Length: 467
Ligand SMILES: [Zn+2]
Image 1: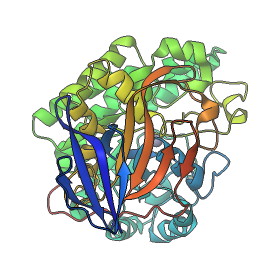
Image 2: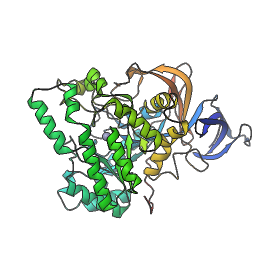
Image 3: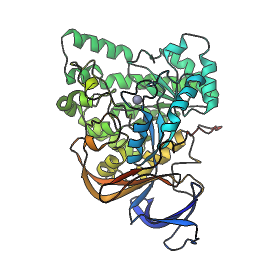
Image 4: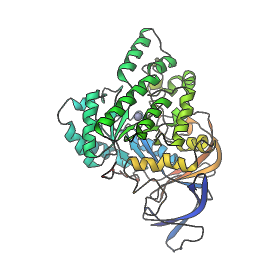
């Protein structure tokens, strides 16, 4: 199978772009040449990209597609359709929001059997370690088996709201980190101080508070900063590669950056909703924007943008987590309403529009934080994350000049709501190419076409000596 992509503009550094032709052979990038420089060939299909921007396919390192188990919220078919429509060619699915959770090879296998036939884009799977598992003796063998099987990374919680995947104590964290170090795999941490949050929540609920700002007050900046400091300490003791997921405030980001500057192997990701919204938006939108951690102050929002540009944050992931809409988001109490927002489909257009178009991020940095850096973190940079000969031909085709308005009804995930409702963005995905094949395309008329269900493949972490 040969395809030649012509009239593509690819990023060349900074905000620069250049016209290139890309030859795809058997799903891999075989040639990147100037316009008209490529050799033809009768068996080559030519695809005219009409001068649109061609980016490496987005790697979303943090999604909850809930399958199997919580498929009233999302399933792998709808989740990966939304990914394809958003220029995302590889998602990394969390282990905690499917049943059984991915805490050993048998649950990994049953999940793979369930989701493989549904995938529109490639996927990796996080493995996880919860307090439910750590009560027994077999967990270190389970962890070893998961790593051997090729999970992307290991997820743990310092504060979890899930009975099926409980948070770890500091001692348990240290044990898991020590094993992860030995097995050569990074650990991703939901970092919020459990004691602090639980005490604040109990106090606020005791006062009869049941409003969005009470929820925000129960999960303050201090809870995040203290947890990140704990993880930095454990990183120092164990030497384990630690990654803080969904960093929501400036100070937590600074703690990570400071530790990194001292040579510790720690990094962080942030999410589009923390770049887009503050507690004022939460007050207005209520549970629609309820997430954990919670959105914070304007100074945090702008600080995260600055840190993303400067390299204090490693990459952007969406934490895509859709609740059943509207039932689970309108339970009558902010405390019981589902926490999570969909995001996989809007991430690239949002970051392009509000990052690159406004001058907050260079195009080069956009590519880094959405593709190249997650590929390195998950150990797949020999396969994905860049436009280079020999790598998978995974691309997002972006029309930079299309101005459009985000409407939940137009999204493709199962439960369609978005805090970005009504937001006007500049730049929209026109096509998504997965290993050379079209996974999604949208004609100028608006007609959308998806590639076959099941075209997405499981991608395993590559084993490395160094992390
Ligand atoms: Zn998450």
